[in-house]
Length: 129
Image (tube, rainbow, N blue to C red; front, side):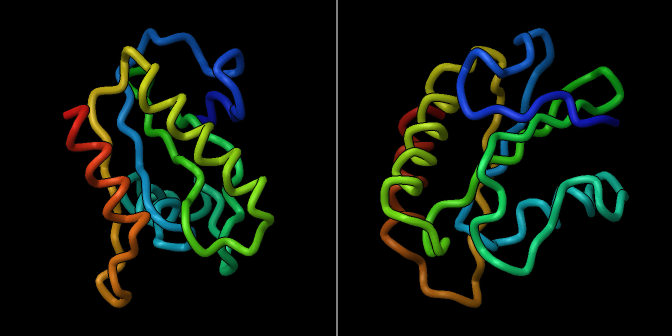
């Protein structure tokens, strides 16, 4: 298991030679924590207590067989509107243009009310499923 790439644009993605499963969700929903749990690695994917720390698309290669992709969170991250918009553009470009993406797992925290952004992501993913 290794960090294969950290990207903010398509030219930084690893080659599309392995299937990819991406994790999407609000900032601070637990995407990185879930990845660490699934891989039984404590600090493999960086985890932070404050929202908005994942600002890149992180590609983790698993046993040279497939990749897990940690997407930046959407929602209540304490960043400027322009930075938040650039994350949305980055996520949409990845999700709509990655030929080897086989599944997207959207995490939603049941302790909080579902937001318009959660619903928007769900509807967008459903359209491409």
